Image (cartoon, rainbow, N blue to C red; front, side, top):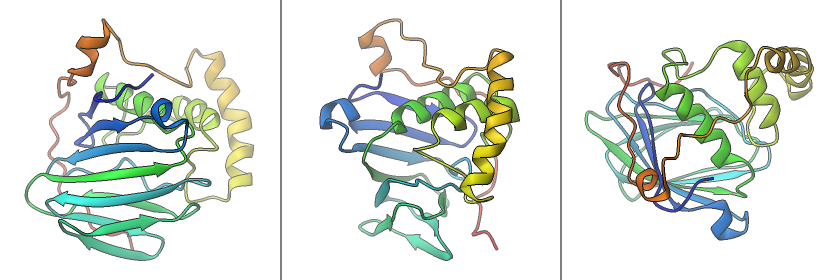
Length: 208
């Protein structure tokens, strides 16, 4: 479970998330997180939230967004809104650290998804894009299908592929949710993961 003040770091994508409001606090209405993106940092992949909206308010630095077919470069004070069902991604578009607040509505299983993906990255179990292997990813995607999907292929095709890949992955011992080690509430709140592989990927521009 995620608590207010918890801090998660992804050493591969260069993202740090600090949770301000959690699903438990808001009765599942929303999750509110502050995100710090290191120079060259990016979200792991373009994705779609079929039933959630996202609102990004930039606080510091410059953040690039790809929302549907539009590319936005947002600076402090500017807001980007992502309607449900819209493919999107973001990246640090400036030379320094970028910071924004994101509100996800409703919460669904966003916290579980982020905790799992960031934990795998911290354990060195993802590729340079921050994604785990195909069977591990299939197990995670199957469990979180109502929260996040790939922009393509179409959802029925993805579901059919997961119907094969996810059971195989589970047979091999892959888990759908991977919580952090929690030695204690106080220690976990203050924790920052040790950074793993050096993050030297240049800032990514818009997809074409």
